[in-house]
Amino acid sequence: MGVVFRPQLPPERLHSFVKRAESSGLDDVWFWEDCFLEGGLTMATAALAWTESVRVGLGLMPVPLRNPALAAMEVATVARLFPGRFVPAVGHGIQDWMAQIGARVSSPMTLLREWTAAVRALLHGERVSMSGRYVRLDGVALDWPPPVIPPLLIGGRGSRTLALAGELGDGVVLDADLGPDGVRRSLALMARGAGHEVVIYLPTAVGDGARQRLDAEVAASGLPAPDPVAAGPPGEVAEVIHRYADAGVDTVVLSPTAAESDLDGVLELAAAAREQL
Image (cartoon, rainbow, N blue to C red; front, side):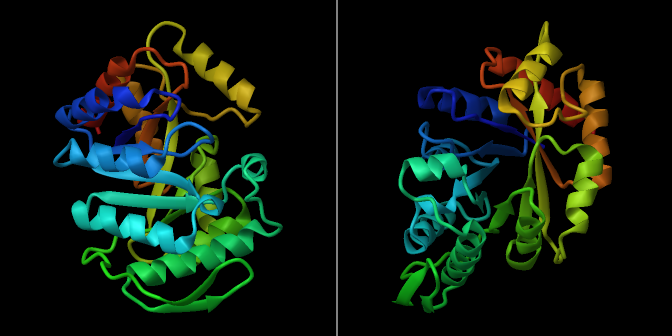
């Protein structure tokens, strides 16, 4: 059970948010990277430094933004500093944004496969030589590989990306618009290994007009409307979480709208719902 600190929030609000999340007894705090807001690795590292027990997830990092050797160095460093508390996840990135920065590739699936394979091998202490379509490494090895290797999750919704998450990833981050039935269909496309974690973001709003604000954000995104969402009292939210758990989800992350003004209310709802699970 976790909450997400959305990148639309200014970075200086992170300290009080993550401290409150930990004191509320929540398990996780999650981030993601949207262009051109906040660096997810930077935010995740700060959150880990300011807490003692919460797990910190970063889903997603767009793979075109980082050379895999640099990404492995960064992830390994964070994992060594905070062993067992960091969960990185990667994905294709929004293709229009990738084009905007000159990083869009003709085959995002090929890049994700090569990139993930290289980073996993580096994190496991291997010396990697690869001459792929996009990833080229010549005898690269980390001098400081992590003794506690963090799980590397893959996020996405398409059948090929889900299959890759089952093949190469340690888990999957699913889109928030799926609903429990969509989760079941997605997991059927994966050949999940033992210990593979399933994470989903659950759209959340609190206070008067909560559902209307969620509907407005969904309409602006152009994505299908998720059902159910977390926009009621704690008991109802706990029931929604149970529905996702029954569908195969391991970690539910409450995700407030980008314009949510009552972050304390979101944290209170998450903590109260967790108590009823």
